[in-house]
Amino acid sequence: MSLRPLPYSRQDISEADIEAVTAVLRSDFLTQGQELPAFEAEFAALHQVPHAIAVSNATAALHIACLALGVGPGSRVWTSPNSFLASANCALYCGATVDFVDIDAATRQLSMDALATKLAQARAEGRLPQVVIPVDFAGLPCDWPGLRALADRYGFKLLQDASHATGATLDGRPMGSAWADISVFSFHAVKVVTTAEGGLLTTRDAALATTLQRLRSHGMVREPDQMQNPPDGPWSYEQQLLGFNYRMTELQAALGRSQLRRLPEMQARREALAARYDHLLAGLPLRLAPRREGARSAWHLYAIALDDAALAVTDRRAVFEGLRARGIGVQVHYIPIHTQPYYRALGFAPGDFPAAEDYYARCISLPLFPAMSDADQDRVVDALRELLPRQD
Ligand SMILES: *Cc1c(COP(=O)(O)O)cnc(C)c1O
Image 1 (tube, rainbow, N blue to C red):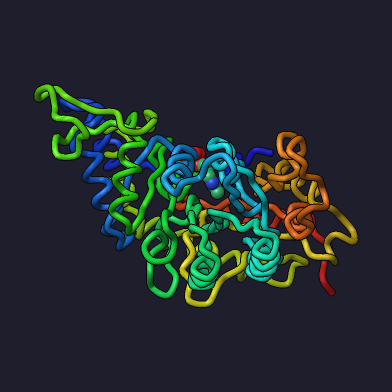
Image 2: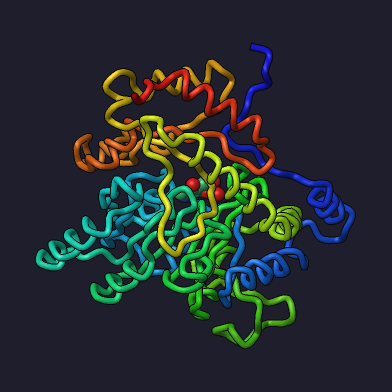
């Protein structure tokens, strides 16, 4: 096949992005300069939230978010099995116990019904979670007002894994601004805004923001008025917490600032491609990417699921391999976390979360990235038409 391979995702780096990074390389500060606070301020303004704390990656962000919310040995943390490993591992880093809430087949996100049922049961057994980590899978906002109502009713904290959802809104409110106690964003190279590797936390709570800033950098305090003991001199710093080096560099922050300026245009292109997939794939034996009333998705992923008519004659692996053989870069999101060997050793087993497992058996994430052309997309659709049974 002479056609160039089409990736499932690809970063969109402009000349302005490159200039922003090279300007940092020529400057005095490669780390701990002015790009980082500027990136945080611009992200916070765009997401309508008072505090933004940038870190080395979203996995680090989830780790310190759990710590700041008081997760430790004996804590219980719940998340969605249809997510990347980091959504659950963050609680294990803190010595907590992880459990999962099965997904809703329609939204592919943590099911609100399953959550409500599990919470009522946990209350009766005295085993309520301290923290629940909903994931805005594919960039589509979860039912955040509903989640907030359950959090208030049952007294748990909401840690939003918005790794897919930079730029997404619900009822006109950006992710990270209104409902969760802490929200986490990822700027890994495949995500909708990239700093190569990078992550960021938002919160409305000033005390949480201060704790997160300290956890990011060794638990250190440099401001004399924040110290527990009188400073020895202008060089003084105090360690008050056990923190980490989870800092983001100036190069990453500069790239992030430049990417954020381009987010509206990149998001508009993702939206146009998603609408075009909806239109072109209609009539094939597929469940298309879900939408939610009042929500604007970030469209990190456009994931299809083979429907029962397709599964009667083929399977996900055959379609996946057929697409790859045609040079079309597809992916699967996600292998349910609880089926991983590490989680099986903790006591989970296949069958525990059947909706997540059923979705996994059907799903394929199609190529979607801002520089993708309509012709690229037509290739994907033509290949699917070849590989799927006709609907007559
Ligand atoms: C990408 C991703 C992460 C981890 O992000 P990194 O920045 O790569 O550490 C966490 N959760 C979800 C849902 C992700 O997609």
